[in-house]
Image (cartoon, rainbow, N blue to C red; front, side, top):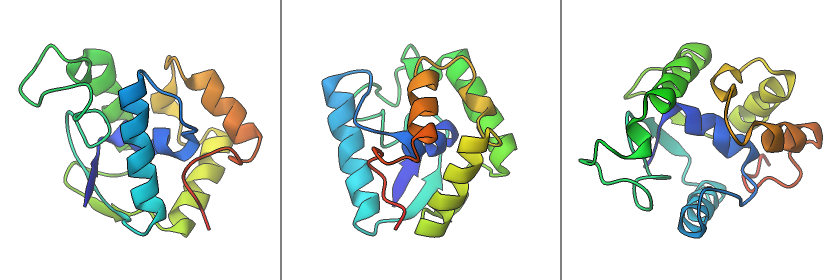
Length: 138
């Protein structure tokens, strides 16, 4: 099972292979491919997850960016907006991805994205129908 923090549920919708570092991007590519290959169960977790933990954060390093107040706030907003809780297990099946992408494009589920450095990139990807996205919705 893949572990994702709440705001990463939004990030994965428009992920195109760009990120904070080469190792971060390589790891995110692997996770997107795992989902595309049928590993769709996702546990919503607090703190470092399968995207950032292996490349950015040690679970016990409270100085890591994953523990910054602004990141924790993004997770809180995403949880409220998406109506999930920590510990929930969801399936990123094609219907979920399509629905979330439609809502993302309309701005209905993007409150957690405000102020993110990737906001404009993700907006452009959504405006072009997520065609460049690494996550498949078919």
